[in-house]
Amino acid sequence: MEKKPLEVLLAKPRGFCAGVVRAVDIVERALKKFDEPVYVRHEIVHNKTVVESLKRKGAIFVEELDEIPSGAVTIFSAHGVSRKVETGAADMDLHVIDATCPLVSKVHNEAQRYSRNGYEIVLIGHPGHPEVEGTMGQVPGKAHLISTLDDVGELKPQDPEKLAYVTQTTLSVDDTRHIIDALRTQFPKIVGPDVKDICYATQNRQSAVRMMVGQADVILVVGAHYSSNSNRLREIGEEAGVPSYLIPDVEALDPTWLDGAKIVGVTAGASAPEELVLGLVDRLGGLYDVTVSNFEAIEENVQFKLPKELATVG
Image (cartoon, rainbow, N blue to C red; front, side, top):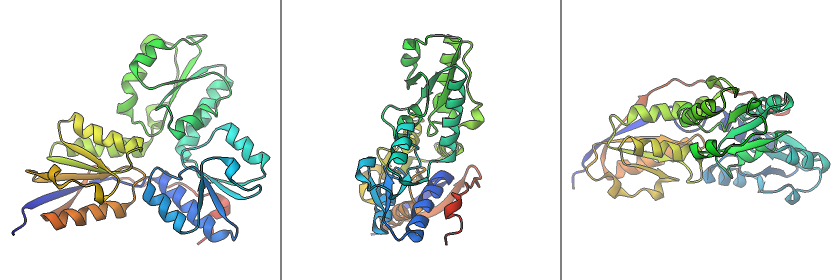
């Protein structure tokens, strides 16, 4: 039976951001450098494929510090950790290598600076997300977590004129603008970072999908169901009226989603490896007569430095 034609648009940029590349590289280099076991607190990034690959190479993943032997090599995930975790690691004499994304560290530093200057902190983010837990735990003073416009209305700071906001990095300018506008309306003296401090990767991947929805009949997003930025990519497609689906891997693809489609847009969350995207394209090629083209929305060439102790490890 002759296959129907299908055009596949590959969003660019997609997949791994510089923070994820750095975090995965840190684990791989640590495994090469140290003969002793290497422990990773929490998933290094939000993707099971990445975690399982690193497990096969020897990394030991744990959720809490008490699962790690005293003095062991320990890597903190890209999401960052609280001061309590940092102190606990020091008390256990752990050899810590911090894989926190530099953009997350920047948010920590901003929140701490505001707090030291007497400001209450408002963090715009998703409750329960490890990055949010880490950032809240880095603030020495009072901190409020909000995620919706309703939360803004319920905010009761001690001094409305000494209020500062920061945001979870995996939210884009577009995700946070309406909440920041509401905060500024309700608290005219509120201060916060410039929009350029928002994670470039989150914004770029969302912008690419927004450009793609004008051409695609269906959007497929490769990423974990618990990945904040991956879920948001799917939501953007849905909001534009394009059927959009989030799949952790090719096995989750339902071919009926593509019935009647002529053009399919494919992207991936910032923690999804390219091998999963290529696997999806191969699967589509088995179902259709596929033509693949890159949908180049934004050029991305950001790189982050590795910790000094791993920089020379091959």
